[in-house]
Amino acid sequence: MATILISDGEQRSALAATRSLGRAGHHVTVLSTERRPLAGASRYCRGSLHHPDPTADPAGYRRFLEQAFRDVAPEIVLPMTDVSAPIMLAMRPSHPELVIPFPSQESYEAISDKAGLMAAAHELGIPVPRQVVLDHRPEDGCGAADRILAELHLPVVVKPARSAVEGDEGTQRFSVTMIPDRESLEDTVRAHPEAAYPLLIQERIQGPGMGVFALFWEGVPLAWFAHRRLREKPPTGGVSVYRESVPLREDLKDYASRLLSHFGWSGVAMVEFKKDEATGTPYLMEINGRFWGSLQLALDAGVDFPRLLVEAALGGNPEPITEYRTGVRSRWLWGEVDHLLARLRRGGELRRPHPELPSAMSALGTFLVPRLRDRLEVMRLGDPGPFLREAAEWLGELRGR
Image 1: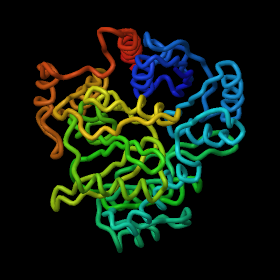
Image 2: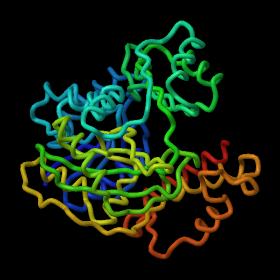
Image 3: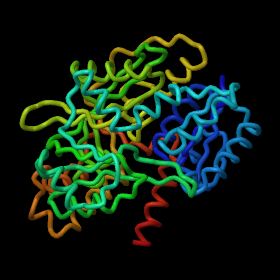
């Protein structure tokens, strides 16, 4: 059995990985900016280490990692976010004794660059949204809006090519912005700093999101999985809080396989698409080259991505998983509560339902009367510590709102 370090212990993905690998007999230590991280409350965690915030103090985080590598002497290190992953990958050449089961740093950076990813997908014949790319911050936001709207129709979505950029003063994070009108477009283009560029401005695809989850190792696919989002936080699009395992569409599997093979992928990846509700065409949104927040659903459906990844990384020969249970549903309870509170707060949405969402009353009903087979993502009877810790934190935040 291996000694494993898992980063970002406050993340639900870290909790799912800790439970998976701890049950398999590995010795798991989690790292976190929080002194009482979610994964650290699990019975399957041997210990947790507190460290500086890598977004504010990347140099301090690197010093911490150097010490942790000496103290814990792990065989495997699993980065869990797009902040910790590039820092750890950059340290890999100076730590050949460690196994970080990710692709090369070049491949990871390539899929993290949305502009380059969209160009590669287009060359591979994979549908991408119509878009305009601004390479640099324009001096005139009005003129930039003219050029954009000459090619695209509103509403559009503004996406920085990279979601996180490390600089001298820490890591800057950038988010996706939905733009309904020309004035908002001008303001958003002007508001983004030069570090956020290139900017992708894409026509918004109206329809449901579809995720394809994969594990490739040295060019060989070892596992596939797919789910559909039933509720998100915030309600109009974001993190899934209620989702269901579904059969993997062959066209999406083909697109994902082409992309991951193109980039020489080894490791896990989430390839995100959005289906145009008018045409049925699935459009590529992005690739996340790391574990995802809803990882526990895949485990519940029979695809143990962390165990397979570690087994492959340690030189084993895991049997590829070709089937999984569909119709399995997973609920992130406190995320669902936040979803409902947002629906009920926003100016009477019980009376004015959103065109892309079930009514708030319907959402409330399915929350209060769940299916008997639904699984709670964080709460497990044999490992209740993380749920109790998360509940205490959520209630504390509620009092502070």
